Amino acid sequence: MLRASGETIEGPRPSDSFDVFVDQQGDLVVLLIDVQTPLEASDGFVSSLMREARDALRVHAALHSVVNGLEMQLAARPGVEAGLIVLRLSQRDAKVEVLNAGMPAVANAGPGEHVNLHPPLSSAVGRRVGEVHPYELVPLAWGSTWLAVSDGVLNGSLDPENVTALCAKLDLTERGLSLTTATADEQYDAFQAVLPAARFLRDDATFVLVSADPEMRFKSGIV
Image 1 (cartoon, rainbow, N blue to C red):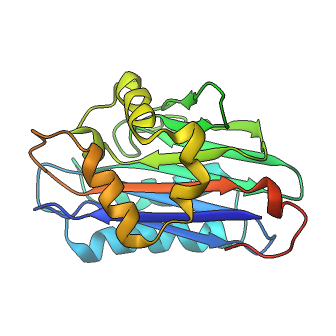
Image 2: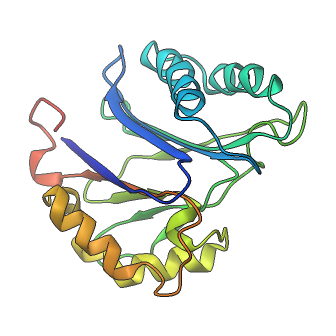
């Protein structure tokens, strides 16, 4: 069984939106968008980007078509771009699709193991016309925890070393499952405690956790 949860710590300028849902083929999908613009992004525009991507992912659309849909929306707003993370986890096929465009590295940690990072393979969607946004295909390892964050968690940085440091502070290799199943208040407090003390909160800070609980592997349902 896959367990997922997340939280957004709101900043003075709304930029983040995320969702976790099951698509029509039974795969668990994590969608995280961070709108990056020199201007104020309206809640309505951020919501429209999420709706476009969510609708495509619910029907298990190919990831390149999800990106194409976002590019069409962003083309009407010059200077606006969107960092994008998509995790599509299949219990049936024991695989994970990882798309990271212009966002902090996605982390994957197993108990007592080294943390594997999946840095962005392209820039944010909308930054360069015609840019290809590739994705990775990796095995789904039971007992592992995935962590995706927006750059607000890292004070605007995309340096993978900062993600490594964040995972160490959270003790993600040992506490991944317990963090994922913690209450919303407990998660909020855990991430507030590791945010940089001097962060200027320029926009939202979002984190999403997904754990593959080995003890629930052969039970139905996604929590």
